[in-house]
Image 1 (tube, rainbow, N blue to C red):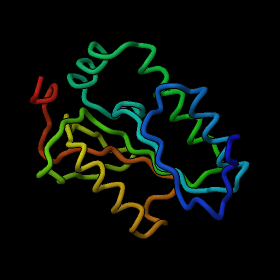
Image 2: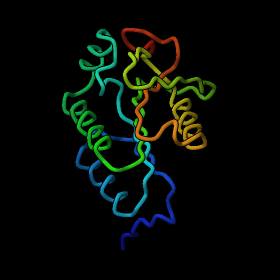
Image 3: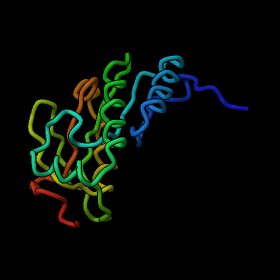
Length: 156
């Protein structure tokens, strides 16, 4: 038996994969039906064409076109929803338990960071959820490690 989502049970939802527009649409519909307004969605850097040419080209050549298209389409589904969303446009991820450094780059600003640790992403999510909600609602941010303006991530 599937448990129905009830608003009283959920304050916010974090969607870690947005490569499938059908799955993203299902999550958005379920949240809207349940009355859950807050969604944080992780998508890829570049869905707003904000990444410098060299990094954008490297990313395009490193990922399947269907994956990239899915991310673009899913981001549009979230932006077109009635949810109080925050889109996090993640750059290339790596693991480093000691690295929680990140910056949030708002829409409309070039986003040149080539990498960010998964631990920094977790820290950013916690900071957003514990911060002043109005700073983040119905907004999109590039999420990367400052001063990593490379043509590709340093670990490739």
